[in-house]
Amino acid sequence: MPVTVTTIRNVELVRVGVHEISTGTWVVSRADLADAVAASSAGIVRDPVIRLGHDGPLGDGAPALGRVRNLRTTHGGDVLVGDFTDVPCAVAGLLPKAWPQRSVEGLIGYEAPDGRTYGFVMTAVALLGATMPGVDGLADLADVAALYGLAAASGRRVVVVASPP
Image (tube, rainbow, N blue to C red; front, side):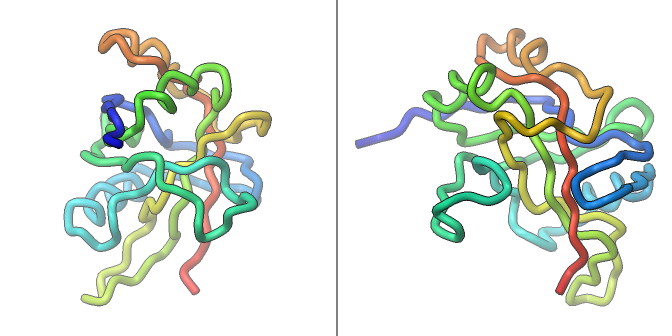
């Protein structure tokens, strides 16, 4: 049975600043956001997946509910933006009510196989329901998606990052 998917363009993901997040204080610089774009463009890691929450009962078996593609910066390099692609329409329709928040996940100080170090590499976006976000000041996704006639969610997100193993 085919699944109808959609794209939600221009989703603000992270903003430069000091953010109190679930793992502590995260200081995000323009260089970090530029590194996320460069790593994505170079194919250093796979396109970040969209998933339900950070952890869940399915663990490694949890489905990917889309990908984040076309990472770029806006607002003079202060905001990381991407497109949510291959999102099942049924999920996109539920985002505003069921998962109104989002949270990026990534690696800090990631050293790629070629030896280059990236300040931040994004690996996933977790859709959040009841959990409050840690990054404020991002555009409301519902406003952006309305331009395309798509359901969407609030622009607030929690950023969770981890160092590579």
